[in-house]
Image (cartoon, rainbow, N blue to C red; front, side, top):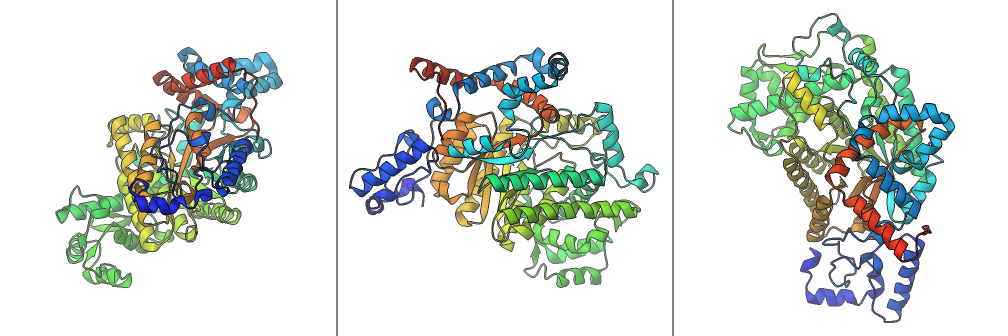
Amino acid sequence: MACSKMSPAMRLVASLRCPLTLSVRMRSTAAAKAKEQAAEDGAQGKPCPLGSQVDHMERSENLLHKPCPAVTMNFENTQEAYKSKATWELLRSLMVFWLCSVDPLVDRNQQLLQLSRKLLGQNLFESMMKMTFYGQFVAGEDQESIKPVIRRNRAFGVGSVLDYSVEEDLTQEEAEKKEIESSTAEVEKENLGTVQREKKYQVQPGFGDRRGGVISARTYFYADEAKCDHHMETFLKCIEASGGSSEDGFSAIKLTALGRPQFLLQFSEVLVKWRRFFHQLAADQGQAGVAAVEIELEVEKLKESLAKLGIATKDEIHNWFTGENLGLSGTMDLLDWNSLIDNRTKLSKLLLVPDLQSGQVEPLLSRFTEEEDLQMKRMLQRMDVLAKKALETGVRLMVDAEQTYFQPAISRLTLEMQRKFNKDNPIIFNTYQCYLKEAYDNVTADVELSRREGWHFGAKLVRGAYMQQERSRAEEVGYEDPINPTYEKTNEMYHRCLDYVLEEIRHNRKANVMVASHNEDTIKFTLKRMNELGIYPEDKKVYFGQLLGMCDQISFPLGQAGYPVYKYVPYGPVNEVLPYLSRRAQENRGIMKGATRERELLWREFKRRLLTGNLFYTPRF
C-alpha cells in the first residue's frame, strides 16, 4: 500500500508505536545523539521529532510503524549536503570545477600535466595532484589509504563502490595495434572463413583505440593471458578491500580486463544473430514491432518455418522441443527460444549461427585454434573466481557495461553468473545503458527470466558513457545507430526501465536496482515512485549511486535520510590514474558548462560558513 493512501485508522494505530517511527538511519555522531534523544522523548510520551535531517521531507505525519519513503527531497540544503566536508575541501571543489569549465585548459590537460611533472618533479607533482584533481576524484593509492574516505562517507550515510582505476598510458598507435591484434582470429588473419562476419562485430581501423570519445569509463587493452590474470588478482584485492572496509559494499569489474576481446566480439555477434532470427520468425507470424518479452510464437508454425528454412529436419526439431519440455503450452517466447539455443550451442560449439541463405546452422568462423578455445574458457574461469570471492566476502559485484559490439556477450555472461550466484541474495549486478534503443527489451527479458527461475535480479541503470564513439563508429562503418536519437528519449527510456524494475520490486521482493545517476529529476522520480509503491529505504532494494567528488548535494542528503546511497570510489597510484583524471576533466567540462548548480551550492555553503563564524569547520564523525 502506498504511504499516501493509509487510512486515518491505520495511522492512529501506527502512532501508538512512537519510539519506532524515526524515519532516518542516522550515522554521524550528532545524528546518533539526536536519535537517542528522540527515543527517550518517545518513551516519556513526548512527540517524536523528525529532526533536522528530514525537515524537508513530505511524510505521512511520521505516524507509521515503518517510515514512508520521501515523496520528494530538498537538495538545496547546503548545510546538510556538505556537512562531511571541511571548508578547504569546498574551496578545492570550487577551484576544480571552475578549471574543468575552461576549454583551453581541458583541451590541453594531458600536456599541462606532463609539463607540471617536469617542472615540479615527481614528489611535488604528486603532492599538487593530491591537493587538487586527484584529491577531488580519487580516494587514495591503495586499499589502506582509501579507508579514511570510506569511513568518513559511511559515517554520513554513504557507502562505497570500489573501482581500481589504473590504466595503461598508451599512445593511440599502441592502443590501435593491441586492439586489432587481440580482436582478430587466426583464421581471419589468413583471410579464411570470414564471409559471415558483420562489420559491427569486427575490429575497425580508426576505432581500435576504445578510449576515444569516452567519458567516465576506464579502458583495458589485451596484452596476454598473464596480464588478464594480473587484472583478476587486482579485482580480487578490490573485493577483499570492499569486504574489509564495509558491511554492504560493492566492487566494480570490467570483462574486457579478463580476456581476449575477440571472444566477446564473436559471442556478441552470435547472440544478436539468433535474436534477430527470432524476431524474423515473429514477423512471419504477424508480430513485427512487438516488445521482445511479449512475443509468443505458435510452436507448430515455428517448427514448419525451421524445417522450411532447412535449419533441421522435422524429426530433429520435434526432438529439440520435447527434449527440453519447451512449447508445451503451444507457444514459445524469447526466453524459451534462448533456452533452446543454449542447448543447441554448448561451449564447444558456442559460435554457431543460422545462415538463412544456405539454410544451415554454421560456425561463425571455419576453425578455431586450440589456444583460442582455451582463451574463451579462461575468461569464464576468471569470472567464476571473482564471483565466488564476492559471495564469500559478502560483497556485491557490479559488472560494468561497455561498447555495443561487446555488450551482448557481457550481458549474457553476467546473466549466467546471476543464475548461479544470485539464488539466495543479489550478489551479481548487471549494468543497463539506457541510451540504447534496446534497453527496455534487455531489462524486461532479464527480469522475466529471473522471475521464472527464482533468482535475485540485480541491475545498475546508467545513461551510458560511449555515445560519441558509438555514433561515430555506426556512421562510418555503416550500421544502424544504436543510441536513442535525443537526450529526452534517453531520459524516457531510463525512467521506463526504472519504473518496470520498481514495479517488479513491489510484486517480487527478489528484484534490486541501483539508480546510478546525477540527474536530480531522475532521483526525485525514483523517490516519488517508491512512495507510491510502498518501497521503503530500509528494504534495501533501491540503491542510489554517484561518482566520488561530484553531486554531494544529492548523495549526502539521501544517505542522511536513510536511503542506501553509494559513491563510485576510484583508487590507484597517482601516475597510473592520470588517464582516468583526464577523462573526468573532459566529463566535468560538459557538466559545468551546461549547469552551474553544483558550484552555486558550494559557494552558498562557503558564504554561509563565513557569515556564521564557521569558516574553519571540520566534520566530526
